Length: 157
Image (cartoon, rainbow, N blue to C red; front, side, top):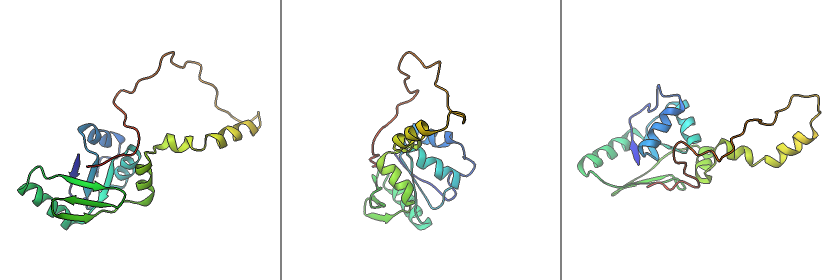
C-alpha cells in the first residue's frame, strides 16, 4: 500500500482519476522526491498521502526492496516518519494537508463544519437575491456509492 516513486510523480496526471486509480489499486501512500502540484493537491483531497523524500532516500528504499522483497514500510503521518527494516527517514507534507488527512476531512465535511453559519446566512439573506432552489427530483431510496468509501482517520502501514 506504499508506492516509492521517482521524481515528478503525477506529471501529466492532473485529473482526479489518477488518484482514484492508485487508491483503487490499494495504495494509501506515495513517497517521491517531487510531485506535480495538481496531482499532489488532488491526492490530499482524496485521502492519498503524498510524502516528499530525498532522491537518496528513494534510492535507498528501492535498493532495500530489491534486496529484501516484502519488507514492510511503515509511514507515520503524525510524526512524518518512514520506517522500512533498519532504514528510517522523515518525509515532508504541508501542515494543512496533513491535518485534513489525520482528521479524515474532505471538501464536503469541511463545508459541513460551517453548516450553522451557512443556515444562519441563508435565513438573513434578502429574498430578492439569487438563491439555491430545493431539489425536486431527489432519489426515493438511499444512494449507494459506486465504490467503497473509507471513513475516518487513515492508518497507513
